[in-house]
Image 1: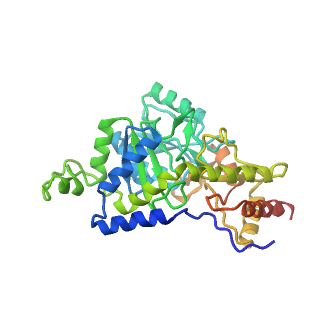
Image 2: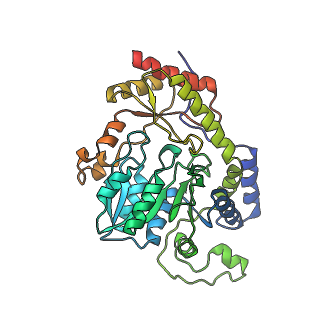
Image 3: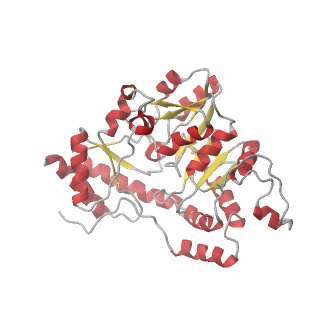
Length: 377
């Protein structure tokens, strides 16, 4: 079987995004300004949040979410070990101690029972990760947070536009952090968004996102007080540009359609793998998932590596989400690898397959047949 190459992902960019960027370039205002404010308002409306703050990455949003809670040295933050580097790195940025927990074997989302076991008097926050596009078990996480006075910072990098029990992700936790990286449902190239219901938190995060300045450049220009501002707190350079926001506004208008295309392709994978030795990761509620990833499970690491090799030979992109944090050199000295049996086992077995708008059902068939054939070799 041969292919002309199937990428792991490809962003869906059309003429409307190109035109929007050109309009911003011709406006003469390129950094955070009116277009970014428009993007924030539209995104807040899309997820049913009171406030949305655009930033330059989901990492920035996660960091600001912890800083807004005044988390620092001596505090503990609970994070699932099956996640991207950023979820743990932002804990280190604050000086707090990282506490890793295992995940659910079916959904790969954080296991609330393990969160309960990990809570100590020093625990200040928990960071549930909405793996692959489906929501973590937020009812249990919220109950634990209320019982122990914990802050919830949702890592929703995979989870737009997803819902949980009828509520959009972005309207549930204390703060929710989204990614607009190139392979997400909507993209700005690089970028992120933080949502919250708390006006005081939103105001502080806005301040922190741009050097702790009392007024941004756009606000100073609007009020014709071009030079006057105060530094009221040590902040960060985390703002999103109007160029990126212009792309985001156009992408946001197509978000539900882009999600629907992903869902259809995932259902086709399900059909093709039915009856084979390949198990898709369980998606508890397909109608709620953002379908960011399509992840399969095979028997063991040797089989996983063989499938990936066969995909590479056929010029088909794939990935693994994720090598658990406790297995990385940065963290392995601080954590017992035997304490995370589910994540360790999943790492040996999982493969993320191509899933993006523009992928055809014929290409899905080629990917699935390549995977199945690798098992029989």
